[in-house]
Length: 265
Image (tube, rainbow, N blue to C red; front, side):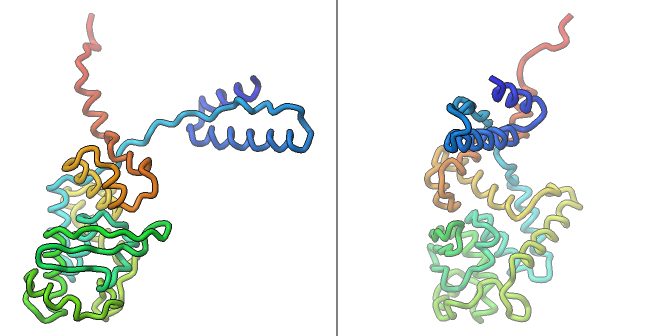
């Protein structure tokens, strides 16, 4: 009872995760005391951790905000490349680290279809993600000057495999591979440009693009957590379940619509 009282006392001022850290430490310590004959019975055997509520879904960008980001990317020093990077993350949901290490050989580029093989996923899990027309066209516009062809899907698809498979997909003006830091800096610059115009939230990050992909996917395919988990490279579907939770904004809107008269005489 003393241990339960301690847990309940902690709960008054600490978050559930902090309380559970103490609970697990006490359970481990008490198990050690029993194993080493300092105690005859384990007093923490029934000390249970707190149940934690699922986190609200991450905020996704609205279509007009996505459009603003892409428009801002068009106004950067390297518009075709930067637009293609944003589209790659928006249309596939890949992480920024996965995007940064892409090579030409990781993409199967066709006029009517395409696939990107993400080799550097979390846990060394590779996965293939389809490339829709939006990202294929953005890629075609970006690589056409490099390949010295017209920026059409047909023209680019015809010569895509002529490039060295190990060549970095995203290159600087010097021809070096872009790093995660450089891509992150580019996205931050685009976000700051949009935030100054009040078209995109200032808290928008590279990961917001991944959240946006996941949210839009579930709007189109409600309940398909298995498919989304594969596309995002989640090992556990429990990680993907966050996207079926309402966001904080949605919860606030729902609560404001409750038909209660709080000012009745």
